[in-house]
Amino acid sequence: MSTLTIGKIARAAGLGVETIRFYERQGLIAEPARSDSGYRQYGPETIRRLQFIVRAKGLGFTLQEIGDLLDLRATPGAGCADVQARAEAKIADIEERIAQLDAMKRALGELVVQCRGEGPLSDCPILDALDEEAP
Amino acid sequence: MSTLTIGKIARAAGLGVETIRFYERQGLIAEPARSDSGYRQYGPETIRRLQFIVRAKGLGFTLQEIGDLLDLRATPGAGCADVQARAEAKIADIEERIAQLDAMKRALGELVVQCRGEGPLSDCPILDALDEEAP
DNA sequence: CTAAACCCTATAGTACACTACAGAGTCAAG
DNA sequence: CTTGACTCTGTAGTGTACTATAGGGTTTAG
Image (cartoon, chains in turn yellow, brown, cyan, orange):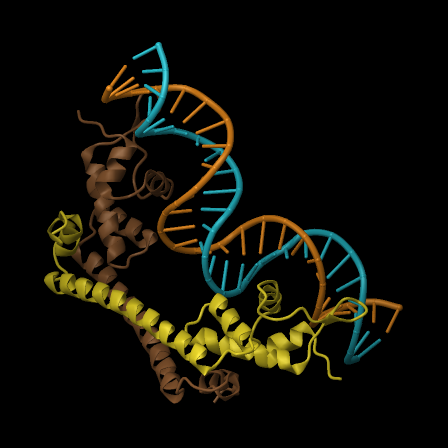
């Protein structure tokens, strides 16, 4: 019968109290039982659920996607393949973002080497490149 | 004396009219002269400025940073080195984001290969990993 | 001359993931 | 018993970069 208050599960999950209430509003965690005075009363499984959320966030899933993942567990007939598909989609997503960032990095890198870091702005190849008509 | 209306410079820069007004509020472009009826009247240099903004955005600069870059050009004594420093900081910034995304990708990739994509969720290594205590 | 296409301001909404109050009530330690 | 730490609801604000809407006035092509 160990019931945990919101502050305790927040600390246990490494989150703020407001974040827990926010996750509740978002439907990521169930509305818990309440004490007579209206305090939220959690069981330890909520800590596990919050940790699941934290780890999934660390892997790049959005709260929406994490919600879907959590819902999946309560879906009869859902299988490993569903989770795998989501993970693969997320990898593709991440790869796309990396590719974009990499293109930016390369473009910037090219400009930086053209710039000797000397002289006035009027001679700056970086600003010039930004000023030029599209190639 | 060619004066351009907001719609024309928006089209020329590939942006929406609202975006131009937004950039004006953000201080990225100056408040232009107005016609008798209150219409904004731009000169062609505004198109160049907008294109500068668009290109800098493409390189990963935030509007704030682009504003700083534009301000730099009006700063006496500012030199090429200042621009170069900003470009290098942005590269470092991008590299950090890539590293983070790459770590996510690798972590997800490891989970995906452990998952044969078969069987019920109870056996899913991906969900299991998300459920497990921190390593 | 009229109707479409354009422009104006001001405000609010979008997405994402929180974070921060205000104003009140509750609980635990000393 | 008091004090400080905790909790509650509801609302609003943060940052980023827009996007949309309402309710007007203006310009231009036919």
